[in-house]
Image 1 (cartoon, rainbow, N blue to C red):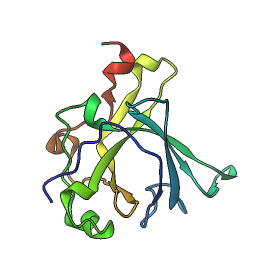
Image 2 (cartoon, rainbow, N blue to C red):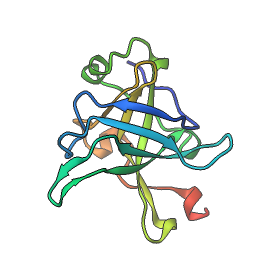
Image 3 (spheres, rainbow, N blue to C red):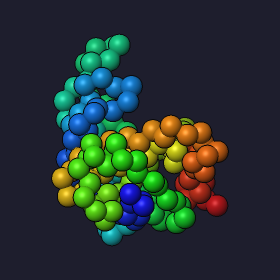
Image 4 (cartoon, rainbow, N blue to C red):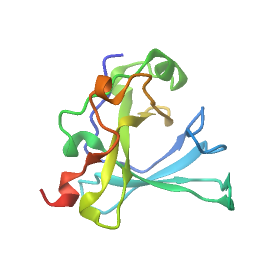
Length: 153
């Protein structure tokens, strides 16, 4: 598949991760909720719909995510055949990418993982984190990309 739709805003939806989330056993169903109002919902919260069993017991987990289109206009993701099949993606415009955000205490130093995006089949509400088999240099996108809109640059 050539690539994915470049999301510029997020919409509320429930997502199913058929293969789960890497490193979080049992995490399969999540709610995606945009943060903020108005037309430009670039950031959202991805929250598990069932408690996840972690070392400290069962708890709901949440991740801050971003639609990369406005923040990184040149961002491109190549979806491998396995992910395309897992998510039942029939056409490139069905697929979109989300990136995980690491929010720091100093908001201006927050980063996003452009290396391993979450791929979403918007038609079927299926999702998977795409973890490339290649290196960060080969992929061309970093694990810790500065979010310049938060840094005020």
